[in-house]
Image 1 (cartoon, rainbow, N blue to C red):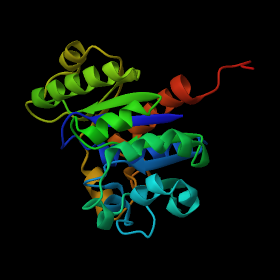
Image 2 (image 1 turned 120 degrees about the vertical axis):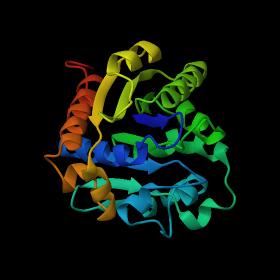
Image 3 (image 1 turned 90 degrees about the horizontal axis):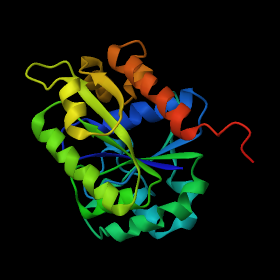
Image 4 (image 1 turned 135 degrees about the vertical axis):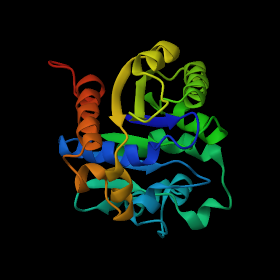
Length: 241
C-alpha cells in the first residue's frame, strides 16, 4: 500500500510529521518505508542525517533494480527510508519518473509512505496519482487551509481517495479553530498535532520526535494518528480471503 502525505503549501511541517508517523507505524509492528518524493528539495535525509547517499530516490526511480541499495535505516526507531539525494536534486528532475513507484513499492515494505513536495506541483500530482490514498496535512491558518482545499480537489480529479486531513501545529495564537478547519475542508479529521518545541529539538539530533521525545504532546498525538491509520487503512479485514 502507498499512502501520500501531502500539503498544499510549505511550512506545514509535513516532513517531520511523516518521519514521526512512519516511526510510530513501525512501533505498531507495520513494515514501513518512508520515501522522499520531493525531487527538487528533498528533506527527509536532512532531518535524519542522510542527505547525501550513493543511491536515493532519484537513482531508484530510474534504476528500480537498485532497490536494496536505496533503502537506508534509522536503527534506533526501526524506520526504513529512501531519502532524496541532494546532489541529484538539482539536475535531471523528471516528475514522470515517479510513475514507476507502484512497481517498486512491493519490494520496499508492506506500507510505503510518501513525503510529497509542498504545493500543487507536477511531482506532487504524480505522487498522488500513484498512491492508494492521500492524507492532507495543514496548519490551522487560513492560507494553509485554502491551499489544502486545492490539493484535495486535485487528488479527487486524479481519482485518488483522500482519506482525511491532519491538522498540524495546533494551539498557536491567532489560529483557526479545529471546527472551522473541518467545516472548510470537508474531509474526515484524522488527527490534531499540537505545536511542540520537541519537534525542532528532535530535528537537531536527527531523530523522529516520537523516538527522541516519546511522551511529548506531539508524539502522543502522532501515535494516536498512527493507530487510526493502522486500524482504518492498513490492518487486513478479518476473515479476508
